[in-house]
Image (cartoon, rainbow, N blue to C red; front, side):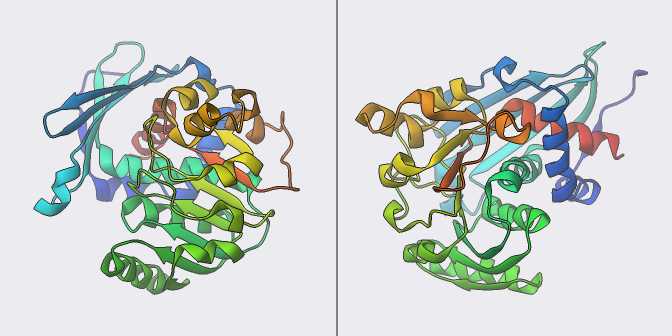
Length: 308
C-alpha cells in the first residue's frame, strides 16, 4: 500500500458498504479459513472517573486494528450515547494507518453479525417468534442480523423502558416484520431469544425456555454481571467466542461455574460449531454467550475498508 491520508468512514458509510448478511458470512468464512480466536490479544478494560476505557487490538495477515471505546453509564441522562468508539485500521506490513472507522457503528454491525454467524448453526430452521431484550442499537442490529439468516415470524421487544421498547417495535414493524412489545414470560414460546441489555442480573426465568430454542446473550461483559440465570445455563449446550475469554469476562458463565452447577469443560468455542468439529445438540436448549472479541472487529472492519 502507498502512503495516503487515512480516510474517515462514517457510521452511515459502514452500513452502506457492508450488509449484515455480508458481515455474517465474513465471520463464518474467516473461521473456516483458519482464524484462531485463542491467539487474539486480550482487551483492556480501564476504570475512569465516569466510566470505562476499553482497548481492543488485534492483527491479521493483511491488517492491524484497534478499537478504542468508552462506556459512560450516565450519558443516557445527558442525551448522549452510553458507548462511543473509534476504530483505527492499519496496514499489517508497514503499520501505516489506512482508515478511521466509526467504532460504534462497527460494533453495531459486528456483534449481531457474530451472533448470527453462530445462530445460523444453533437456531432452529424455523423461527416463528424472536424475543429481544433491550431496545438500543444492539437490539435493533440483532433483529437485522437474525433476519439475514432466518425467516422471522413475530418479533417481541422487552425492555424496562416501555417507551423505548415501543419505539423499537415500531421501527421493526416499519421494516416489514410483525412486532410488538411484550414481557419476559414471552420466552416460553420463542425459538430465538436475544439479550442485549445493560442488566446486571438475569432477565427471565430460564425454566420457561423451550428445548428447541437458542438464546444469545451479548450485554454482560464483566465477571460479576449476567443476563442469564443458572436454570438455563445448567441445561443448555453452551457456546462461546473463546473459552479463555469467557472464563475471564463472562459472568453468565463464571457465576454458575462458581456455584458448582456447570464446569468450564462444558464450554464449546464457536469455531468448533461453525467448522463442524462439534455437533449441535438439538435435544436441549442452546446458548451462545458472546463477550465480543477484537478479531471479530477486524474481520468486519476489513470488509468495510475493502468495499471503498
